[in-house]
Length: 359
Image 1 (cartoon, rainbow, N blue to C red):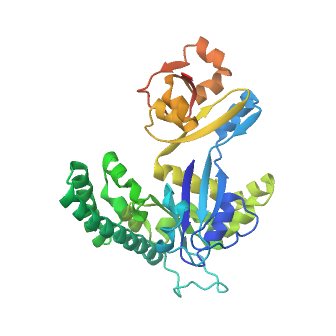
Image 2: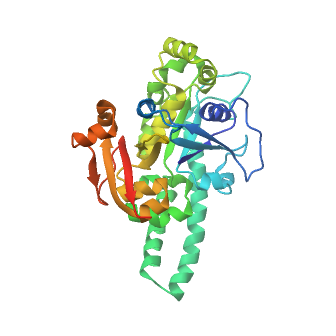
Image 3: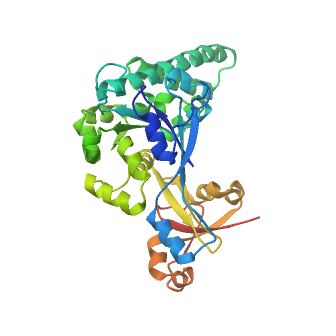
């Protein structure tokens, strides 16, 4: 399951967005600084809906995303380092305020989306710099006592990271190899996590979600920081989410919105992280599973259960659209479209898979 942490300045609409994303009817209660409100959202996927209509399963399980939200006034980077939900987050969603509300003054006295984006980014950088400095001090001592190739490589990476942080740039801009990124993963650097700016729009501009970054001067900042951006008017979309389906569709059409704010945010997060979905189907359950792009079949099997990955033998694979067109797995098999794939197979978005494995 994809995990994302919400961050933002006070009065940015972060809690409203959390309610929208997690279908919470009421604002979550505040906890201590070492806790966060956590909620889960279902990922809409019409392919899974159509597969369920075809198989009529006893159970229907869409992919999910877990969102964590710090209590108001505790979204600073120092606090985030103490919260497990943020350390384990796959991505951070920074809610940037662009709406005007005289009853809810901006903490900095004016609206400036680029300034606010940079403010939180600098907190991430300072927090990570402290972690890097402490680890380098320890490594210097360890290398004198018991030098090793792995410790030297880690030291080189951290020195490189410190230079980038000293320049005021996030670690996500380093462009590390998969191997080097794995070496640093245990530190859970905040500025190394993928960042999605959620531009919280004014009600008058709720329909301008697709050009929000350009409209608020954030396009260049997003590109230079290695982030991504998506627009949403959390207040209006929360109201829409509480309507019945027909009224919600009509309201969205009036605003010129082609999809809900929830779907836009999740789609943007999937794109940012390079995630996709494959499906397992049958009379008992139809289910979507979220995995990174370029995942080999055994590792995809591990998303279901580690025992299936360990005992992996083969994967029976058919594209979702092919299955839906043929109407059954038997028909796909008869037409030679249900393939047997081995350990080297890279799972594709929309694959329907049955894993053969040793017990």
